[in-house]
Image 1 (spheres, rainbow, N blue to C red):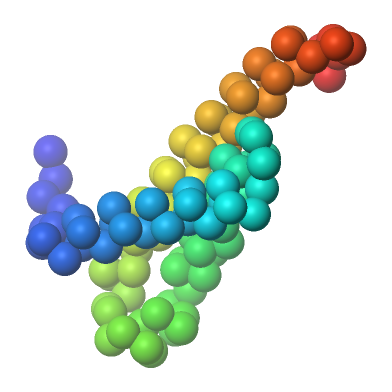
Image 2 (image 1 turned 180 degrees about the horizontal axis):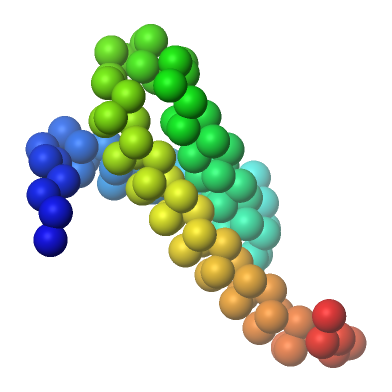
Length: 102
């Protein structure tokens, strides 16, 4: 397995980032929509981190190679939350009064 060179700050920031975006999504959305909102935030950040001269490299002094790690992480988290959002939407549709496949 490839070494990711993670330090304690990266792990703490990642956990705080996940908690903050999920809390923000839950606060502004209801039910299964919160997970879809969180996935959207992650995908927006994924595209921002993929550019070479982005705002994060300028503000925080992070190298582009380090931003690629965060780019991959936000893409993975957005994908997982998107799948979970789809699962919750399907379960909500099955349990509703009017059942539609699509």
